Length: 154
Image (cartoon, rainbow, N blue to C red; front, side, top):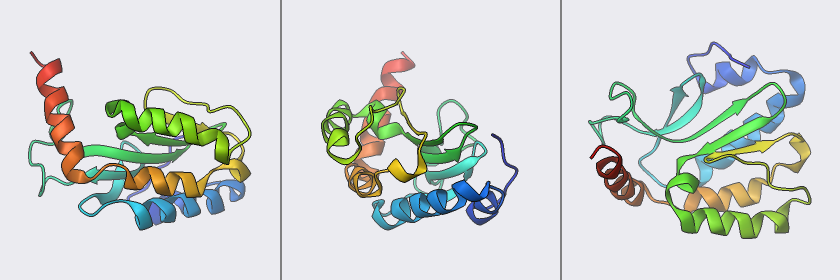
């Protein structure tokens, strides 16, 4: 689903009742556990946590006008999605997530390259997401991002 919003609060206010509480709790979990330097915003029609241009003026290599995305959350038609660029970029974080997930949730991990899908709001593992948010500092993310951009733009 696409929501027209200019703030996270407006985004959440537009959600169906069964999603508001889960998205609000997910948002707060991320905000409370994300390392310093990331900025909360609306990005690509979702609630996003980005590296602001004030820290990384080059922006996102795909669209330099946009700040570099790190984590986004969205209410989709059939699920809530958590997009985390770190699990795509840091294989050790992905391995950790895959190992830890079954300890917190009794259903199979449903994910793509950087997207974790939660179809049941009551099964969102907020404590695991809190740990995931702490795994990668802004500095480590930027170092890895620079390496990846050089690799793919050769």
